[in-house]
Amino acid sequence: MKREYEQATAVGNAPLRIRTRGRAVLSNPMTNRGTAFTEAEREALELDGLMPTAFTTLENQTQRVYEQFRSTKTMLGKFLTLNALRDRNEVLFYHLLSSHLEEMLPVVYTPTIGEAIERFSHTYNRPRGVFLSIDHPEKVEQGLRNYGLDAEDVDLVCVTDSEGILGIGDQGIGGIQIAIGKLSVYTAAAGVHPRRTIPIVLDTGTDNLGLLSSDMYLGERHARVRGERYDEFVDQFVQTVTKLFPHAMIHWEDIGTANAHRILERYRDEVCTFNDDIQGTAAVVLAALLAGVDVTGTSLDEQRIVIFGAGSAGIGIADLVKDQMLRTRAARTEEEAYSHFWPIGLQGLYVDDDDTLHDFQRVYARRREEVADWDVADPERIGLLDVIRNVRPTILIGTSTKGGAFTQEVVEEMARHNPRPIIFPLSNPTSRAEATPADILRWTDGKALVATGSPFEPVTHDGIRHTIAQSNNALIFPGLGLGVAACRATRITPGMIAAASQALAGLVNAWRPGAPLLPGIGDLRLVSATVAIEVARQAAKEGVAERPLTDPVQQVYERMWQPRYPKVEAI
Ligand SMILES: NC(=O)C1=CN([C@@H]2O[C@H](COP(=O)(O)OP(=O)(O)OC[C@H]3O[C@@H](n4cnc5c(N)ncnc54)[C@H](O)[C@@H]3O)[C@@H](O)[C@H]2O)C=CC1
Ligand SMILES: CC(=O)C(=O)O
Ligand SMILES: [Mg+2]
Image (tube, rainbow, N blue to C red):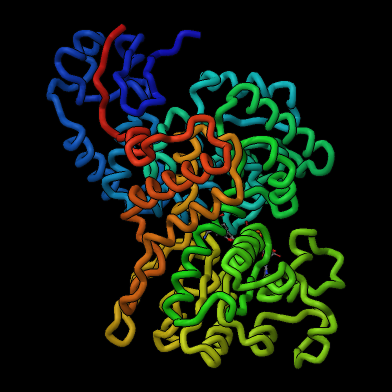
């Protein structure tokens, strides 16, 4: 198949060689540049007469679309405006996004993406990405081939089965938007080339009755397929991606709790694969926690950590913090490291006689004897307040999807026994945050060290302006993907995740009162490049880099795609 355009894409911004002419050039978002085509380009590409005569620059176009964005009233409307722009002109979309990252990330990513996913079947107007149905496993390979990319063309695929979208649960086919959103962040934050990535949804059905009973729903209309058939479908997907795109990293997003760990364990030693909710989240939260612990003047071995909502993200965080404890000798044995955590789920504190726990959760369960003499309201379900009163934790992490779960009573209890409690309500989107930073700071008289999953405005308390760190895996996955692509890593090792976290931690300066525990979204490109360099270095050290970098700073920098119009050649 002859493509409409050619570009030596692997090296960033090489000249774009356009094969089509006339309106076909304008209807492809990667070749279109609207009124920014010069007179000579218009002539060569047969565009004369197809647009207003004025020539405008990318900056001028960006100003125009920014005005359109600002005049759109609702957040979902802004999301759709940006989506439509991306479908018209990808360079302009990314130039706009990069120029206003702090303002627009909350639109293309959390929190607005949550609403866009819920409304997918209503707002749908043109396809983007690859949709693979469990009812048609025979079409998986053709579906991926039809996207039109060759073996050398793909750096990463972002795939979801939509069972655990953010904190809003099963969203069926609408989950494609989270894959698209994550890939936008890869490009805006790390300069991963937008045409070297593929967003994919595995449509395995949905248990969301609202979707199943809606006439508008665009996915397979049956309950989620589980068990052997699901596993076979996932396996077929992994094998096909590996065959067609041998250098692509597989990024798993928002897979349900029961499958996320299993899939990661199944493939981590076989292919280049990464679970963002488990590993990306852990890396960013570890960096924020270490910054917070530093500010409290205590050390890691003194921490008692409650994980409220100990599912994929929560246990991922515990695992990485546990490894950090072992590496830094804050704990001498695995058992000692596990003892620093108190995991809580819907059933209350995880206790070792609970046979509903998955294996990856069970290792953190507390012993029944240990809690037997606790003073609790209901020994069958030991709740968050019970745990805080009995354990006196220093750190409270929320990955529960339960908006408002950190009540005034809970937060005040944390402050009662801690001069500087560390409290991270990490659930997304904003409506699912376990508490707002303003409330936490008010209830703790400004003492708490706070980080959130979605963006929040700064809070002024007692004359101090607290900038709230957004502890979101967006500070990790773009750089990880860039580093992996730059050195052609064949695996994602625990060492590479730890290196990503350390790279991020190295950029934090949280000593000033009210300073955030992580770099801001405005620094995403710097953060991502730094993470990429360290990930590539670590991959080389561990022998999993096919092309170890000889000059990491220069090579990573060169690899970053810039949203600029490349030189055009009509071929
Ligand atoms: N800030 C960040 O970068 C990230 C944030 N998250 C957020 O964390 C939340 C959880 O995501 P996952 O771990 O992927 O989901 P998950 O479904 O694997 O885990 C959620 C856990 O919370 C528990 N839970 C649910 N309701 C609860 C309640 N009322 N009380 C106590 N526990 C409860 C569940 O039993 C489960 O163990 C989501 O809101 C998601 O947006 C997830 C990944 C990254
Ligand atoms: C940020 C993210 O991955 C989540 O909320 O699921
Ligand atoms: Mg996620």
